[in-house]
Length: 371
Picture 1: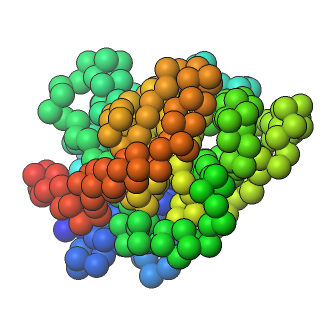
Picture 2 (picture 1 turned 180 degrees about the vertical axis):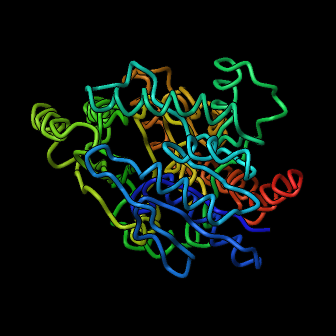
């Protein structure tokens, strides 16, 4: 069986690209015939890869070149990931079995400018076309499956939920021991948040919460890791102003983008993982934190609702109540035993839901059912 994965941008630092890369590497390790077809990319390693052209103005892969490549390759399965690959899969569906992977499209309330609106509108249009001409649909969360069923009235058995996978050896509680030994005192607490620095990811809400947290835990520091300027170049400036306004320069540190290879150590040094995100199709950093044995605090919204079991592997605050959020973080700061217990539960959940071999086995079963 030959499988071609279609992804617009197969580059470091992009969530969809990382999800595809992990699946492809595991499929290859099991001896499958796999190729990645992308507009551009640098996540190549030893992965068979073919470029099909990328329009830098419109920010998407070439539709005509992608379609020509699919029809020339004639794989058994074309597995599309997001725009415009879903559309290309639909156009090729009379010749090739099309499996469509839904990662989620932002709702209107999170369109911050005309550029974002244009991207979401075209993605929504091609999503509807792709879904109509797909042999099987895979989503990254139950939240997205429910959203698709509600929006498109599709048969529920046509949609499968497979969570993205995490490297459980790379992201592991075992990494934490060497950093715990270097901790000077119990009241030095490190909070970590990973995700693109943007309005939707809610770092400003974390700053608001920190204003309350430092009143009771003044030695707490929050580290913000993620790309800047992609959705709104001015957000980082407003965020820095907010930090200065609340005199949190020593407590909130913006680290910016870090290579994926540095992230396991960042999680290992954290006492609590926090996210202010307002909307996520899945939320990879939450999964990585759980795999690392770090308790999590988030707002109870979108896919976060299903990933966190309250009082078990983390805590969920009402959206977007920063005062309650701050109290939840303080509770974990003040109760080391609870942090450890939630961290263990998070790791157990990660082993159960995010293990790569298990998830790829489910994917192979889907492929085989279509042949």
